[in-house]
Amino acid sequence: MPDPDTRDLPAFAAALADRLPGSWTSEYHQHEEYDDQFPTAAQVWDMNLVSGAIAQYVLRHHAVLTHEDGTRLYLIDRPGHPGEHLAGALAPPDIDPEAFRGVREPDGIAVSTDVDMAAEDVHFDLLPRYATALAKVQHNAAHPPAPPGAPAPEPETIVMTWYGDGLLAAKATSQEAAKALRENGFTYDPAEHAFVLPGDDTAHQARCVRNAGQQLDAHGIGVTLRHPPKQP
Image (cartoon, rainbow, N blue to C red; front, side, top):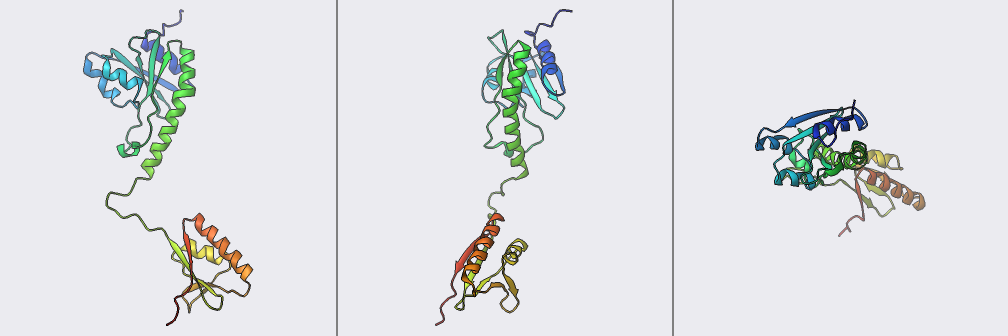
């Protein structure tokens, strides 16, 4: 049986699905009229060759390859280049458009009708850039910015106050802060409503303060050192 002519888009798409790593399926779509190219093309995640071809040319058909993990590739002929096709990624569905803000598109590529060469280019060029862009979008979707007008939360800060006898007192406002203070030599004094660190051994006290500061910083908690206000 002769090899399929991969200059023909449906044959190329089916062959590419077989060559790419993992399990891929291929769906071919012929366009009966001009508007048929846009429902799928509107999902193309590209601001270069592929989107340019969609905007400038009437496309007779397209194919979509779908990986078992949901990744989708969009394939069309490359207008004016009979020895090439265009391959681009389709954007992941059901993600807030705001999550795409600031993320560079994993622009599509021109690939040879030689399906082995095309599979190598897609695997080592297009798909890694798609994975990088997808990870950024998913991160943005999981960590949306605060709504406009909502005040940003104030970062927690621990104030450590030196007293005349060398005593250092710190008030914790969270469990993480209290834990860091306790683990670095501070003890809670109910009378002061604060964690205190005696100054009998100044070298030891300095180490405790430094270590506590590093541990607090790891939790995003700042430290401010100050002296008590002078008595009138």
